Image 1 (cartoon, one colour):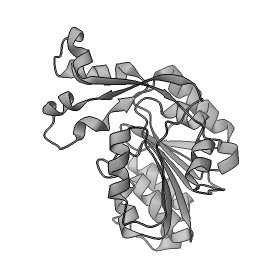
Image 2 (tube, helix red, strand yellow; image 1 turned 180 degrees about the horizontal axis):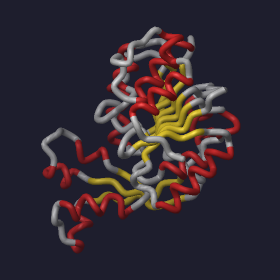
Image 3 (tube, rainbow, N blue to C red; image 1 turned 180 degrees about the vertical axis):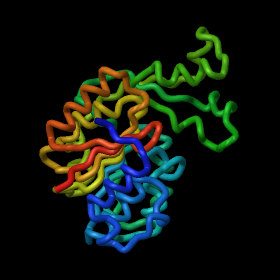
Length: 252
């Protein structure tokens, strides 16, 4: 059963002994995920995070402020397949310690078409570089944004970049990055409709993630149900704490 209410979120944090161990007030975190990060930072000397779909490391990023505040206490592998965005990601983290990078897409090692918006799409947004936030192996995921702007289907190609990308498993990306993670505390995913595929190819049994935070809103009902069955097989419980996000966690 998926839990949703704020009261249940606080109950879970209590179950994790979050408030008692860390002396945090309930007003010191804004979301369940922030509470998780704070609790893990307090309880671990070397908190490890893998972020799949890191974008530029700033825009809409749930990790960035923690990296700034706790510089040196967090080891982060930031994974982002888009070349232009990846270069900006590295610049944005240039003054932060213990950050590793991987310009890869995580998946089942197959070669697929990868869709992203080009600069023609930026005219629909006032925020600089907002266009590059959206990329996906799921073409329909990007087309819905074009339809929302009343762009005719015959003109879709003016706004899209299409590239062939071969995905790798998370284990391969970690090895290539020289991050040398044997266990990972938090797996953060924002893969624009590809989140379940990332999880399936993340070697859960190897890395023993304490928390997996992912977007579910782009997944079909069938795909989401299959993902829940997969996670529960590995002993995870699931909490839906946001209209778009769920967190899978293990209470020992």
